[in-house]
Length: 135
Image (tube, rainbow, N blue to C red; front, side, top):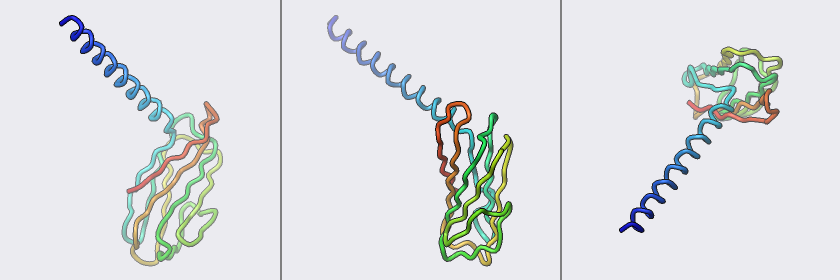
């Protein structure tokens, strides 16, 4: 009987340790996200991507917006560095904390889905990070 209690106690301890390790790893991942994003609008003739930049802000941000090549882009605000079929790319230098809104205007209603990738270097660790944003 005593041996069975020790086995059960051992299993409980192992479960608790695993739970703590998972919780700690989740906090580490969350702490690394210096930039988060959400779509304000992802339908119709306008796409708006809002990026929330924490403090300290990464020095530079690379933002790539992906959409179906059948969409005709009439403009972006701020102006994009490169526009190709199905991909729009921005490079933001000397960013500061706060919200950055990116707007894309289309000739006709959005066809297909959108998604974005945001890349930056963590100013504290120097680690290169990447965030995906989907509606």
